[in-house]
Length: 110
Length: 121
Image 1 (cartoon, chains in turn green, yellow):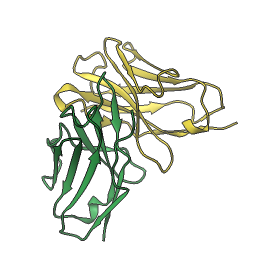
Image 2: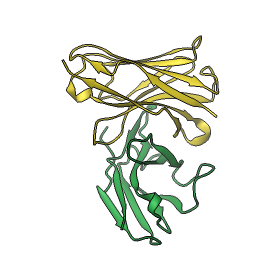
Image 3: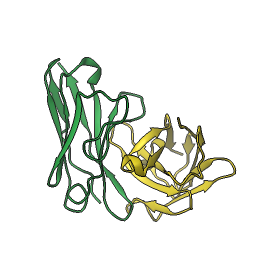
C-alpha cells in the first residue's frame, strides 16, 4: 500500500484556476469512487473538502470541485483566493477496509 | 455536531508503547453510522492512515503498521483508543483521531485537533 502521488506544489494567481492531481493504482483510485480531498492550514487539523470523488460537504465553497479518470483523481480550485493557500491531501479507499493518503500538495497563491 | 479530542502522553521512550485516547462528544460512539479512525502526520510530512474501528469492535489497520497497532473502543466512556508498540523515532508525529460515515463515502468529516507525540529517550 503505497502513498498516492501528488505534485509537491502548485501555484496560481488570485482568480485563476488550479488543478491538483492524485495518482494511484487500479487497486485504489482506479477501483473505487471513494476518493476524498482535505485542506490543511499550518498547525490545523485537516478539513474535508470533497468526498466520493466529486461531492462537496455542506459549507464548502463551490469553487472546489473533484473528478476522476482511471487511476487519477483531481481537485480543481477555481477563482483562487488567498485563503486557499494551504496543503491539500487526497485519500482513497484501498480495499479490505483500508485507506491510503496522497503525498500532499502545497498550494501557493501568488 | 461531533467533537473529538485526543489525549495521552506527549513523550514516549523508544521500544515502549504509545497510548492515546480519543473522547467523542456530541454523538454516541456506539452509533452504527460511524467508523472511528486514527491518522498521523510526522513533522513536516504528509498524512498516514493508521487504522479504524467500528462500534461493533471490528478493526481495520494499515498493513505497514498492523503488527504494532491496536485500536479499541470503550462505549461506557464514549472513547476509542490507539496503542502502538515498539515505537521508534520514526513514530514521532501529530496523531489525529477522526470519524467517518458511510453517507460521506467513509471520508473523515470530523477531526480532533491533534496531539504531538515525540519518541525520545
